[in-house]
Length: 196
Image (cartoon, rainbow, N blue to C red; front, side, top):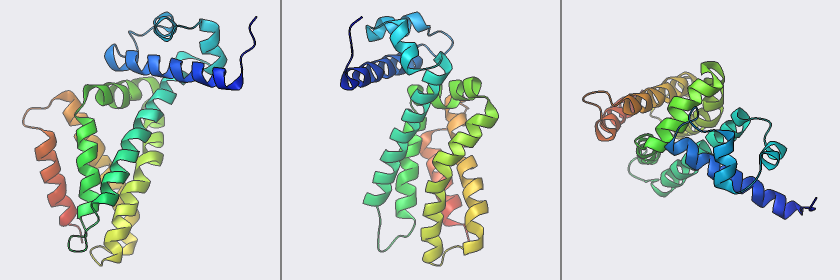
């Protein structure tokens, strides 16, 4: 048996994750087999199970990676949009990025559809809440410092706004009639600017 260096092992792990992500994006969780993942990754089942306890564990890692990529892009957009004249600009710039991601079939399939099916609704909500609510709360804290909302409303508003964003994402993934990323963004902007 060939000895692998830690660097080689990590490269194999990254290759498996990339292959799994591509297949989960294009075929979905149910129609992606372990055999297909290792074939695409050019590795073995033994290597996959060395790094991941199960197909579900591998999916959860892909799901988290997608969420963290979206999160990083929303934070960067918000930071770039901070405005001395419009306290809502940063929050809205991050929201615009979220709607861009939520409009893609890959995000819809992995995060919104298969994520809930594979992880279960309760675990999906807990994990999504940990990843997303802090960003929403940070945006609301900034608005509170500017005097636009009261401090005691930050936590309940962060719960409500995160769920509004998720609901909008689900609506996009279902392709509900009359719903687009642009009109959802406009509605969210009106909602956000109306908070007191």
